[in-house]
Image 1 (cartoon, rainbow, N blue to C red):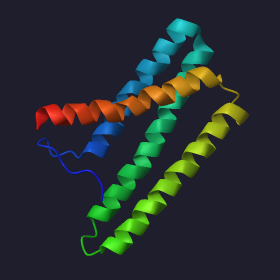
Image 2: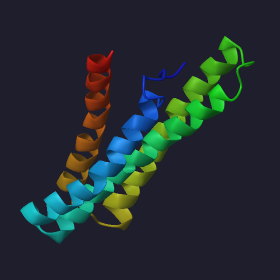
Image 3: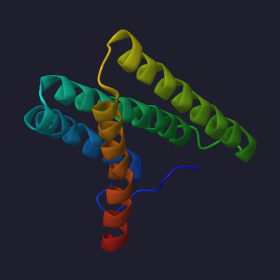
Length: 130
């Protein structure tokens, strides 16, 4: 249902979460240096939103791996539930950041977009290692 493990023993999803966690301070500092503290905070928040959404996937992936007895029907329901949970978390955190915290929208979305590129970077890195 989810990604497999690579030669280092860490599956792709936790590797993405680690990449996003490492990217968070870089995005915050870069945003602050380029456009000021408010933009840096917004970019940091965007990366952290992407990290939170990825961590939900890591949690559900580990849950499914702990239950090898689950059949395909149950795993498919978990797959759908995970997608819905991730979407709702994304919308809630974006609403919080843009609404309640009044963060700048462009740096926030750029931080989110940058963190999503971690998925691509990990996928490309896995292909080269295989």
